[in-house]
Image (cartoon, rainbow, N blue to C red):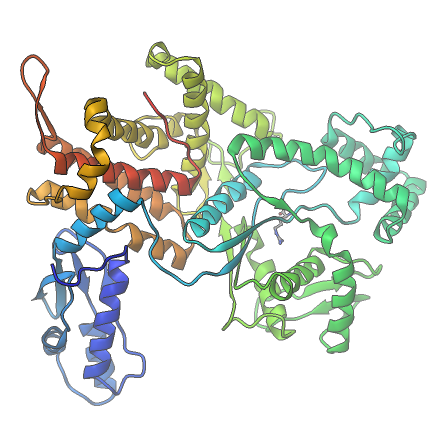
Length: 594
Ligand code: ARG
């Protein structure tokens, strides 16, 4: 009724704000009072849990006030909120909060009439550094994980309206190129005029490494080629480009299959910036000599490893390039927020980079948010590092191919191929396969290791992409099956039908849907996309409860529709719309039919 918000908001944030301000008004002795709001539980819609910690804080200031009295006082002084129907104090001072239905009704109408909109927030320039495989080396499951997580984080930020720069920090620079170039000169002397037919770059890499380790003359020439390359000499640069192109094509194939957009900006981009950066760091007196190397400390805390800024031979390292990179992103790209998505093994590296950037005055953490999103190792079903049976790294294109083969098998097993046309079969096969691979990756907390199992991810029961995709198609078909005449009226019905949430299960479903902005806020805070997967699964299971106990469409014995509950059909539509938005953020394509 009165003043219900007219836009999508995070309920937790709304409750936090009013409880925070109330607390501050009652206890002016706290500059920044504790305020704890927890999400929906079985017993209450939301809950405020700050009375207990507030009581102990007051005790420290020699003020005796029981948590129960604090809770009472908070409730008495709470301003009117169109979201809160009533509160109830339980136990030592927990404040249970019960929601009005008004906001939920507005929320559902907004979704039906305007589409799924993000909660309002300040627009930021965000750099997301992900995927980032290395030239001439195998792109492995770790890079796949980075690709999938980084793409999804980027999709989320783009949905929120941020200005996102997706960067592929390719490992395309470094001493290994010396031996690759020297080897290329011997194998394809005519490379300057004619593109060399390198079919297997990994084998090529192994061959040149072998020569490098065994042949002194070759080794010398390799070193010379690095110097030539770094000074921009024409032929070495050409050779380097040709080698990079071979890898590039392989990587692009994977990105195309997974529908991932990313801009290449490899380590080579920073060569001149590394040179000037090292000069600056030296002038600032931040570099220390260490057995011929130049190193830099960040905070010099226990366990910190200093960065190697210049090697004893004078060359630069991964550390140097990341220092130049962070500077470029802050000063040239004007980033407000930088996110690095790599395996958790690089945590110390990034900790040192951030500390050194701070020390050098490049990074001001009070102005710029910086995150290393480190993820766990991908394991095989045997619990060991993911490898092929012969112990090699798994080729990603082979892995994706196996996914589609298995997905098609499943489709045939369930005889779905009989009701789909040719194009629909291809789409279903691919969307299920890639959807499952992505979902399996995203639905685990990214901090943990995870076991890669096709059998598990292609199971259509439980929290899997297949289950959710099928659930989604069924929800979409409820309105669609009512025929063209009905669907033509849909826009009008969406505008004019009051949403009814009288049945317990209708209300339960609505209360799940309105959590969408809460979930997004939580993901932004913790940078863990699996909350969105849990949310999708929660929607699907709550929807089933609703659908089992609330008729949407009544049919007679002849199967003719005799009654349509339009509000409920619209609730189905809103559910589908939110699910579709979640799938989109996860980078999963939905199915039309099953
Ligand atoms: N190429 C690196 C690897 O394969 C990942 C690079 C991540 N990005 C960065 N700015 N260091 O491990």
